[in-house]
Image 1 (cartoon, one colour):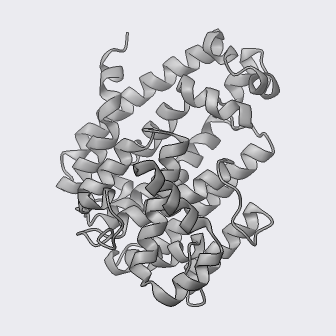
Image 2 (image 1 turned 180 degrees about the horizontal axis):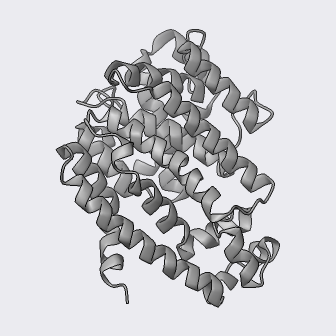
Length: 318
């Protein structure tokens, strides 16, 4: 029954024939809810459990009604931090398109075109965006909610735009099969992870900002992207997070690893890089742990939940 409900929701959200009816009959909040729920089930089908920690963190800190996991209703996004989950789902939608997990939305011929269109919405606030099951409408809702909670020194528009630039970089890295340097990857993580963290802290009502926890973006980017599972998933699609200086010393080309990603499991140079990434992340985590003691409870909980599963690995380093 649950699987049938999920399929019905997905079919409903993806059927172009429903869009006009939706625009005429359903309130904005309900349409947003259906979009975010549809994206949740898409993630569960594509990568069961992969994003559970993050989603549970956002649900807990946003005070969402847990009953909305079991029935369709506009109660979602009405908690104490209603901008958090829609913001994440919008970001994940863009990320999945950039990584090739999802196709371009209807009406776009390139990812660059999609990025530019969304930047124009960020600038205008989406005045001309019509209601529907679209990435543009979700962005319009995200902008409105974030702008209501941002502080005087915040600039959510800039954060969203820089994140889109990072996604365009990720897209081009994939389609052009580009291998980046360590510094280029670090800069990329600062924008593809760091800017979303700043948006989440704003959305969750924390007084902390990403500039106070910069280590987090590097820990998550470097730790997850050096894992064997991630390498095996990304390399066949031309996505390489192995730095160019490491790859050139390994004796393999990206084309070879695309054909046989398991080569990365036994190559001494690549494995030495993996071990070094974990050691570096452990050191960054120690620094981060000291910093978060001075932050508010939302920031501490956010960081703690996102790094909790890494602690055993860090503690067992040789």
